[in-house]
Length: 356
Image (cartoon, rainbow, N blue to C red; front, side, top):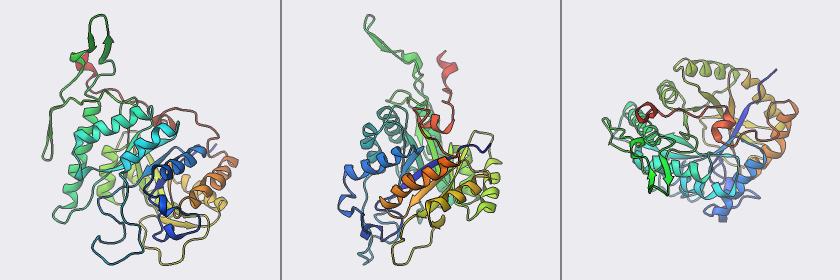
């Protein structure tokens, strides 16, 4: 019997097509409102999707330099992590995975922000870690910094034992100080003593995800992430990529393929070259493709809607029912946490033996 697949969507402004904001049904006047994002995430939750990722980057537009003369692109964006924090209390089961650029942020702050998101969402937080290119830095150096960043964040999440909070009114002890630990990380890019200012998150460690296109990013993702987004062109390349990534680690790892999807009319105009396979067609045809690619060794798919909210509506109301008819997707959530949706266990605290 075929295992059910996992399904996520990547949310980015008005959609992944640069002209998406001009399409009928688009909401360009609301792109910088909380209500717009809440509606998208609640729509995805209605489809019982595993999680949404929320895109972010250090540039104001994905397809052009900030000093060019183009006026036909969406400029500017809201902070992805703050969007996730805003929609967390408005949703109940779907995972929330904002993008945070590791090479432009301090790991101590990222750790507390994501731990806070995990508390606000009752265990549904994740982090898509990104290494942003810089003109004066080599790619290997950027990935090494990102790896150190993830390591510091994970250590800080573990710096409080699960039972560090006593809350004993009679004795006046709120915490057991012996169950808070210095992480004492000293590396090339960061020196962090700890402990965190935020107790260990409900999931122990929120989910870490990374997008990878080639060997060096595969190595980074296999060593540091729980979920890897890859970009195969077809089932054959999906099989090869999945085997390569799994061969780099003995850790439990979920591999998702990214696809840009147009389930309605694709906007007119040139589509920029995509790192991911572009699908155009009906929801049933997309279900056929996902089923064939799943057999190549993938755990799930992260779909990038070309036009929002139209293509997300087609995913929820067209693709999901087609997958359910084949027994390939859940009809209801069976877990309360993001790790639970993916069948990933709650990690043990690396400092538990010290605390004991």
